[in-house]
Length: 169
Image 1: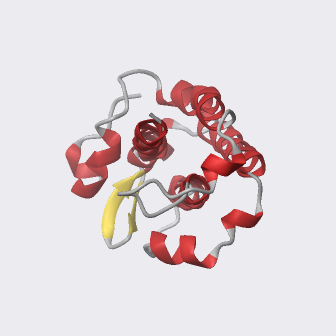
Image 2: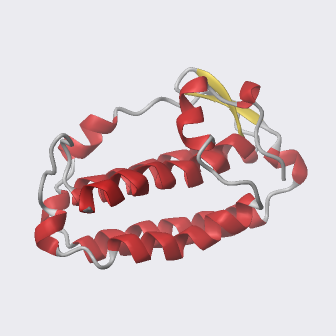
Image 3: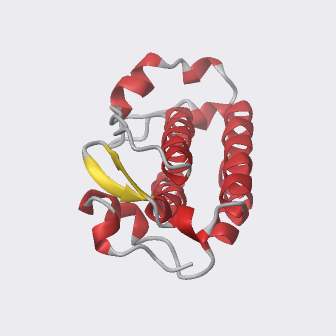
């Protein structure tokens, strides 16, 4: 599986894709579960509810955002891999976070939810054909390949894990 080329995704997503190390993306999707758990499980509820300026979301809200984005990117990946041709809408991450009450759920429960989503997505990508990996669709008004969406899933978690790590220092 080769890294997606620049014409396989909107340039904004290079923020995520560029952070993904070389290697097998299917393994990285699967193995990232341990990294998610290692980073987020030790965080106390008290710390998870705090805002750490200059950031505007709590760590629980960041985890909720990771869940929302995991679901949306994976839904796009699934639809395009299966041959869906209808354009998929964008998402406004701030609306999602404002509409969800992540503070009323434990961080542990949120981590469990992300882990379950990722494990399901890992199983999905394991069964994709070469043809499916190369399929394209339109999401948020831009062309994207299934391959690029897999890299975006991994890179998005890396991106936010780096920010959370800085916040915890």
